[in-house]
Image (cartoon, rainbow, N blue to C red; front, side, top):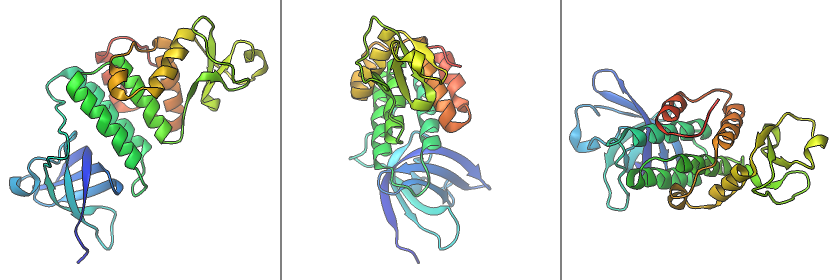
Length: 257
């Protein structure tokens, strides 16, 4: 029998399977994203402690199957070293938290190393839990997670000439380049671009460098910046996340397309 393995984990998605089982998708600290089946999870409170629901943060114990993609989840337990997330007491928290879970699932691959993704998501959900939802926190999370995934967006400098972004001058975001070009370089760039107010570009550059806790207390970038991130995510994911419309309707400010 395969040895039992363990890792801290955040539940991204869960659904019932048969009369008593649960199938869950988790982001683990040590093994990346995993899909697993928990036999008897709906009936066994002792082994799973109701820790197989979205937003649960628990120590996961599992065994790998010789054949098949799903691991066998043997236990899921609370741990003093893991911060719990209190998300379900506010509609804004639920909306933003659900979006964070779905974006995480979309940008991670099963079995690939994802310790950095786990740390970004853990910090994000803890901030939502303790501070509440906010547009600046959403933007900071999007930028940090895209950077982890290898899509570091550039808003601080022009992709062409490296000139620093200024609040009093427009910038032009080019999806295919993952960054902005300045007004001086724009005529020589053939790709289509989204015009950003200089203040919005500067705000995004600042949010990308702040901790998520500090980002929560910072003024968000404007609707033009929100649209730029949305278009880039659409190009990467080739689809719109189901939770995006929900969070757009709940969090004020920031037009999305």
